[in-house]
Image (cartoon, rainbow, N blue to C red; front, side):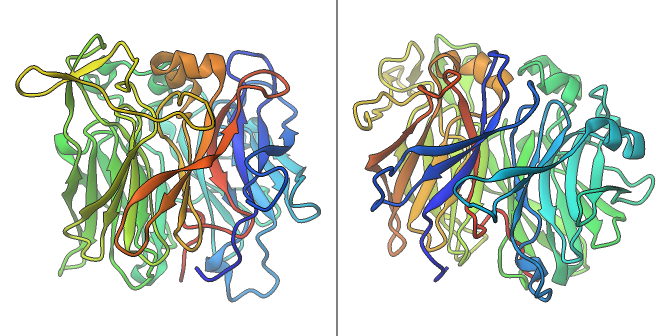
Amino acid sequence: MSGPKEAILYTTCVYSGRQKPDYLATVDVDPNSPTYSQVIHRLPVPHVGDELHHSGWNSCSSCHRDASASRRFLVLPSFVSSRIYVVDTQKNPNAPVLHKVVEPEDIAQKTGLAFPHTSHCLASGDILVSCLGDKDGNAEGNGFLLLDSEFNVKGRWEKPGHSPLFGYDFWYQPRHKTMISSSLGAPAAFTKGFDLQHVSDGLYGRHLHVYSWPDGELKQTMDLGNTGLVPLEIRFLHDPSKDTGYVGCALTSNMVRFFKTADGSWSHEVAISVQPLKVKNWILPEMPGLITDFLISLDDRYLYFVNWFHGDIRQYNIEDPKKPVLTGQVWVGGLIQKGSPVVAEDEDGNEKQFEVPEIKGNRLRGGPQMVQLSLDGKRLYVTNSLFSAWDCQFYPEMVEKGSHMLQIDVNTVSGGLAITPNFYVDFSQEPEGPSLAHEMRYPGGDCTSDIWV
């Protein structure tokens, strides 16, 4: 947390429907720089239709015993094509270059896996990547891909017969010899956009999968029930001695806390609940918040999450993990902002919409989606693209005009959030047209890339 202040960050960007390759953007976040809050470099990938999404480093704090390890290569799984790109950031951090491509045919032939999502480095130097299905989009084919330190396919990480019901995100806590993964759903369903019938058909998840670490034996499956539909991002507390963490359940908009019990098994409870809003002029009579991303500050004091539909970012004090306290909230978009055709209703039938300010003369499009926190916890960065098929369905204006990146000033003493008025990264005027920005990374690691041992 006392490390150097961030000067640049990397974000994955997608040209939706434009038959142009996705790219990794370098964004200047140094307020003393003449190119502050601008894209200063773009690294296009060589193929079209990849859907760059999440990213992870080749090494992180879990490799601290290895003096030769360096956070040099950024791993970019392509969510749709199943290709994995490896980018070298060391030669010129402002202008990274492509180092290697792991082709989907190689992955499928050796493991049967496809639709890669989350990557984390391991203390061994290997890379672990969650994959959500087989090449045909069936969830039954999901599991965990293992790459070696040279980014060659080693095989599957989990033991044979120990694959989860559905895949998505994961986090491991070595001192407790445990890894826990979450469950979005079947790629054949979610890649086409969201259909509520698919939930009833059992094509979306509601489970957490508890594995022994590092040997990949599935020890327990936690059914979160109807309060935990579509659990996405999952994080343990950063303190490696702690045996608790949270998962954001998107569709039911609950933050669920998981924890180890006295007998060594794992349990769960709803820690925060975002109530759905009664709405008019939308596809459903009630609108969930849709918690699609969250993170925990490095000192484990604050938790931040987004409501992609409602349009707000929240800050909670979690010094008592069982009893989070709301300490900050700010609206930065959403489907119910003033000027939108969608309106919310209170219990008395009164209509309401949320005030969303313009930033540097720009109306904010879409809803808050991915977040990244500065190491000192004082600046929160946010982008607004979720997944291009869902962006097209719920925020077509954002797809047409491009997404943006904002910065939120954070009060780390007593809590509180405020939009930084002079920071606005505009992806509407990119070289190949408007693009969609997703996950962000700092060259020096951050609170969603690093795991401590």
